[in-house]
Image 1 (cartoon, rainbow, N blue to C red):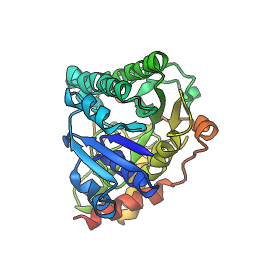
Image 2 (cartoon, rainbow, N blue to C red):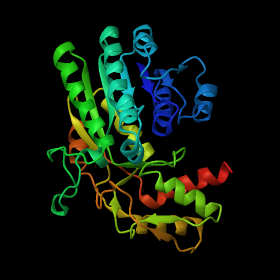
Image 3 (cartoon, one colour):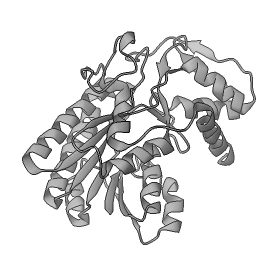
Image 4 (spheres, rainbow, N blue to C red):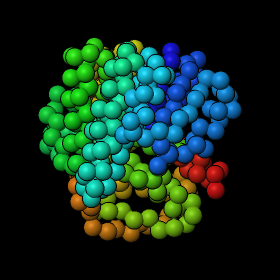
Length: 315
């Protein structure tokens, strides 16, 4: 398969590039390196020098759809995004420019190149908004009522995918991701808390918990997530599919797990909760089992250990 990965130098994107190359595919990486890093692709470039190509292109640029037309990928994995809820609240026009206009630019390139399918990194944590506790874990049938500009931008993109499928026959799958964590993680956004806590504890720097720490998230390990993207290249057409564990973990529980791995007992400090933050979030993964034959397998303790080991080795 000939694949193109936007945001392929980023946290999840670079792990996906590794997986696609290991499966024998050729991969075009598109990234503007605003948050991604070429170092994330260093091993891929060594192991697969003839199978991976890297282009420094902004998905909002006029050059981007032309690049897609030249590359002629069979499948595009759309990972590039402005992914910080706080940034979307402070800079909504900037957020929309990347997440909405950048996606439309991608779709235009896909139309020209006659791309078979796009697999899109949607946001399960913000897509559904503040769901009643009795409806957790959230299923895909829950109304999409995002409460942040970031969530709205990701929801709007889903409508564009539906329109381009109807008009031009471009297939898609949208994977609504829970809070992804793992090695190479960018310490921004909600899932970045794993990297932040681990990094601080390794450096013996105090950790800050916003709110009382009882807020929950569904933390899913990056290798598990990448497996879902790989499978979605040929499955789950036209579907929005939750990718999560179905298990709630509070921020306090997460902090305790990381302290255990780091063998420290340093208490965290607490500050007021941040605007736009959900109290509880957890995704029902049953549809992923049905359409992708996927489920997560990495326990939180095992995943946190890999993050700590990665950060410790890169000091």
